Structures are given as structure tokens and as C-alpha cells.
Image 1 (tube, helix red, strand yellow):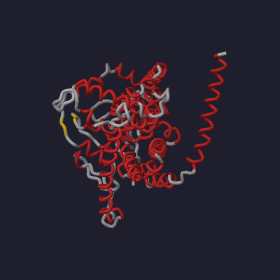
Image 2: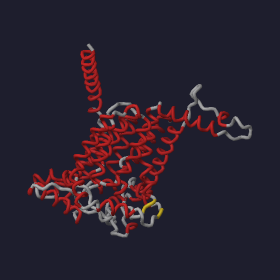
Image 3: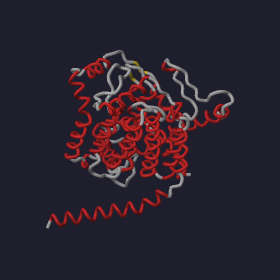
Length: 428
């Protein structure tokens, strides 16, 4: 009897999900604004792709993929990193697809561009699902035209393949903290492992994952954790064989780097703001070559430079507004009574104008309880953790910080700007 009931419930759930998709899909397909955005994004990432950067890292990665395909090799690592360790091999496995059909590395660059175009579509879908259509349009439009992301979406490299997996990772986290679905932990852990293989600094994304675990612990299932560990063991198996054969040399090198002298600066924050640029990319701060895509004084971009400079300042202001609004929504407090906090409740018990520790703990517990009960605020705190923590951690560093280290936060700035504009427009 129970088996029959469970089968009936499963069938009903499948029919409900199918009907829901059939009801939503036409409206999403008729979202006309995403089509010109994708057209612009495709043009900016595919036009004159034969002029894309192709140096040592690019040639090494594609050569390894080509040799793996045509000589039956199983890559255990990819190329070397700037800290003298070996990167993990997933990038080589992905590049084996274009290498299977052509020895021309141009097609690997095309694959990279397509990955980043798909990331813009995923950004639109994610932002529309959780923040609305207007915010999604703005976020996708900014992502499609931001000059720094265009540069990193046009050449072969490990970090340039990150973007679509980052958005899928956010989809998994929001499925848990906002929609309160079970089963989100398995894709989240697998995607985190995939992103770690593309660039090791994505391990910082374990922070928003941990925040999600704290917010919705009841959605965690043991079988999701076990399945994720099994899957991660499979995709990490070649690299683990390498580490065993080298007696974990890469791990010792990485741990030795933590003992070096650390410095605190604002480079990470500067690189984070640079994602809002629509006209300029400068490597002078890294001690390498100077690159200015504005070209000569006769170029159209150069003539529009004052306007583009103003637009960047406006975008930075809107980004700060997005942080402020999201933080305000997260930190707002609702008491147990009428849903509003009373200023007088913060001061009582001592008669000296100070609240007691027990009162503070009680109010903190009430805030945490109200936060966990509000899915939208849970989503915002995960979003803020994703954006703030990597910048703070990279502000103290032993090795030099580079622009591509911050690619793990993309497209967060564009989502926050879209969120800010959409919220302000709804108020006014």
C-alpha cells in the first residue's frame, strides 16, 4: 500500500513539475531582451578571434590536449602555475573536444568564447529567477559589454572557462537556501570540485557553501554527500596519482608559500572594481606590459572615453548601492512580536544605558532565526559572502595578486548593480 502511494506521489510530482515548466517556458522564450544581448556578447567575443592571445600557457594547454587525443594519453596535470606547482588536468580534458576535430587552436578559443557566452545566458536566467526580469536584463547587458570580461572570454586558459560553472554553482546554492529543495549539496560539491580544477583559488567559494549549510541544514542528505565524494574521487583520481608519485610535492610547495612574508594592500579591491570597466585594462600595476585597447586617437572608443569614464563611476556608485541594499535587507531585524524591532528593547536590564550580554545573545538569536525563515534574505547573504570574502582574503597575500584571481566572483558585480537599479526603480 505504501509503495503504491509513494509511486502515485512521485507521478503527481513529475506531472506538476512538467506542467510548471510548460507554463513558464513560453514566457521565457518570449523574453526578447536576451536575444540582442546574446548577439552583442557573441560579436564581442568571436569577432577577429584569430587575433586572440596565444603564448606559452595557451600553446602548452592545447598541445597537451592534442597529444592526449592522438596518442591515447591520460593527463594527470595541466601546465605549471606561477607558484611552481602543477595545475589540475580538467582544462586539458575540456580542450580535448576541439583537439579531437582540428589541430588548429583557434577552435579551442572558439570553445572558450562559447563558454563565456553561455555564462551570460545563465546569468540572465539566474538573476531573473531570483531578482526579477529588469535586474536580469541589466546584469546580462553589463556582463556582455564589460571590457575586462570580454578580454578574459577570448583566449585559452584555465580561469577563462570558470564563468558558466560559477553560475551553476550559485544555482545549486540558491536551490537550497531560497527554494529549500533537497539534493542541492551534490551538484554544489561537484561544481566546486570542477571549479577547483580550473583554478585553485576557487576553493574560496567554500565560504558561501558553508553559509548555505548553516542556513538550511535540514535540506542536507547523507547520500548527497556520499555521492559527491565518490564523484570527486573519480575526477581527481589522475591528479591524486600524480601527487602520490611526487610525494605530494605540490602540496608542500603551496604550504611553504603560506610561511612567506604577507602584505596587505588594495590590489584585490582595485581588480574587483575593474570588472565594471567598459574601455580599459591596465597591467602596469603587475609590472608587466601595458595594454590599452582604445587604440589610436582616431578610434571610436577613444572619442567616447569621457562618457565611458563617467559610466564607470556611475556603475561603481550603483555597485556600492547594491552592497548597501543587500546588506540592509540581511541585517534588518524583526522581533517576535509585531514583526518590527523596537529601539527601546536594545537598552534595558541594567539601567545604565547598556544592554546585558544575555539580551544581546537573545536578540542575535532572534535575528538569526528570522534570517533563516526568510528565503530571500538567505539568498542575499550567500550572494554577499560570494562577493566579499574572496576580496577580503586576497587583500592579504604572500604571492602577487593578478586580475584573473578575481574571476571567481564574476558575474556578481553585474548582478548587484542590476539588483540595485531594479530595487530603486520599484521604489520610485
